Length: 235
Image 1: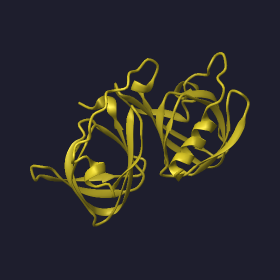
Image 2: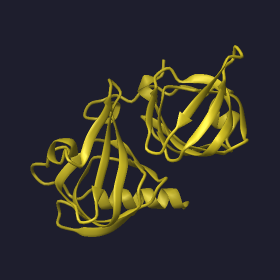
Image 3: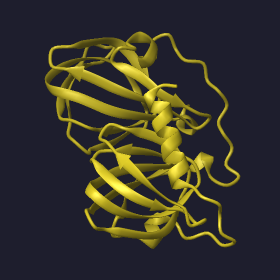
């Protein structure tokens, strides 16, 4: 079992307990000082979660989501069945969290995480039909820089990594939400030969509604980004 799968299972176990007869409200409603909505459309809702050591969050739920970790922190998590556990967050982690319900206390570090609630995975939502990957899909054309972390019927999540001077050949992306971990500047080249400069900054969230096809060169910085491909948004 690789470290990502093991960590994801630990997150899932810590976040979800035996449900009470009546579940708590969604985190954004119950604890809006910590969980701030920053982006929403027909496919997802994105919140930015921030808190300092000593903060406590009351019992709340989360819709099915991708959770991207930006800060290092340790929590005491409590689930509705009364069980408690310790949970560590480390920058760069990304997990699928399914129907979580918990409260927490931040014991150390700083909470900074991006939660991407996927609407097709909620309630009676229908998972989109599978679409074959194109030969120039980023994870096929350049798997060294676009490393697949996990996939389910609703999302495909990969980590993009590069350093200054590296180039990536022409490749494509379906509609994708980007959560940047570091600062980097890329020079993009489109299929028609046009070029442009694109900057990423730590904690930045960008929705690429049309995906796109391009090549790139890392001009400066050291880049790491979590890319969340939302399958319901594929044309």
